[in-house]
Image 1 (cartoon, rainbow, N blue to C red):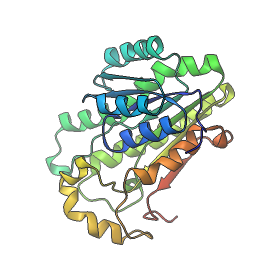
Image 2: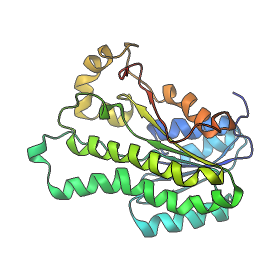
Image 3: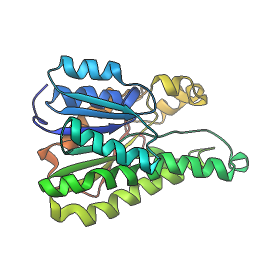
Image 4: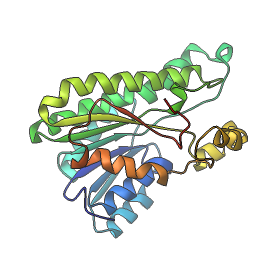
Length: 248
C-alpha cells in the first residue's frame, strides 16, 4: 500500500464489519487515522488500525439519531481532530414485497440509509470547510439501475443517496470539498450471507460482466481514489463498482 491518505482523518459509518471494515483497514494502510460509528463494537477494527501505526477511535451509536451523531462529531474532534474524509457506509437492505412494507418500515429504512448521511454531513462538513479540504463518499447501490424485485423501499433510499450526492456537491465545491458516491452490486459479507439474498448470489453474479460475487475488497480501491487528491476535480458523480452489472 502507499500513503495516499497520509495525515488524513477518516470517519466511516457502519465500519465495524463488512464493507465499512474493509474501508477502515485500507484507509489506515494508506496513512489515515480512523473513526468508526456503528451499532456494534469496533474494537477489532481499532486494534488493526493501531497495528498499522495509525490512531483509531470508535463509538456505538444510532447514525439516524441526531443527538447521537452530534455527540459523535464532538467525540471524534476531541479524540483525533477535525475529519477530512467521511464515508457514509451504514445501511440496511430488507427484502420484502411492496404490499408487505409498512409505513413504519419505510420510515426506518429512510432514517438509516438517508437521514444518517444528512446528519453525518451536518456534523463534519463545518470542519472540512475550515480546512478548505474534504472528501465525502456516500454508498448507494447498483440496484437503482437494475430490475430489483422486492426492494422498493431500499431502491428508493439509494435514489435519494444519489440525489443527495449531486446536490451537496454543488454547494460544497467552492470549499475544496468533493462529494461522490459508490454503487456496488451485491457484496458478499456476513450480513448478506445470512439474508435471503444469499439464495440469489449465483444468479446475480451471472448478470455481471465479471461473473463472480463481489467482496468488500473490490470496493476499497475506488474508495481510496475518491478519498485522495487524485480525485480533486471529480465531484457529484456516482461510480458503479459492480463488476459490470450496470453497463450504461
